[in-house]
Picture 1 (cartoon, rainbow, N blue to C red):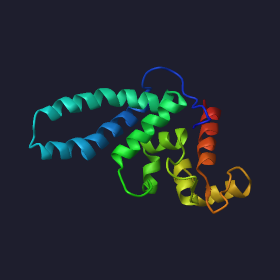
Picture 2 (spheres, helix red, strand yellow):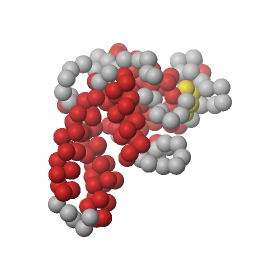
Picture 3 (tube, rainbow, N blue to C red):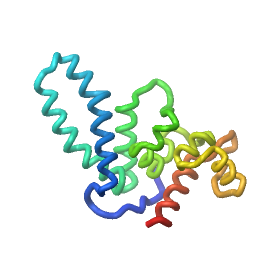
Picture 4 (spheres, rainbow, N blue to C red):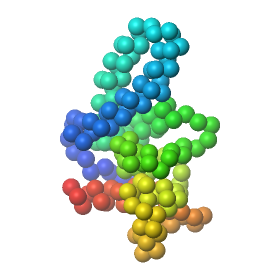
Amino acid sequence: MLDHRCQVKGGGVRPGNEELVGQLIRLIDIRLLDPLEILVDGHHAIDSLRTVVHEQAHSWATTMVSGGDQAAYGVIVRAISTLYPSDGPFNPPLDWWRTPLGQIVARRVGHPTAESVSYAVAGAMLGITRQGVHDLASRGKLARHAEGGVLSAAVRDRLLQEGTRRA
């Protein structure tokens, strides 16, 4: 259960969220619809699915950014589990955290499958270096995990605090 509030106001997709919408549409096209189109030998029904995805992507992005905590968490977890299926834990490359989807996941959920993250992952989530994360942890500004790294929730909370200061 999430216990934080995202400091985003408004009803529609905000101008910066168009990148998130675009990323969601591209990922769904590449990972789901294109393979399905190949499987059904170019059946025209895929075109109507693309239309639905384009319409729904705006709703998903709005919920991820400004929806309630439970709704945002639900959409994010569904998107991650659908678009990045795996038998193991979710472990995206470091540069994924700099994408629009990676940034909203970091802000709303933290790391969706890890209680703690390495300094490198925390740095990617925060947009700083590993050394920057080490410095924050050393000064007590980012909670360390007992088994190493830092708490994913602490990274999320720091991102939310930074967003509140900028707003």
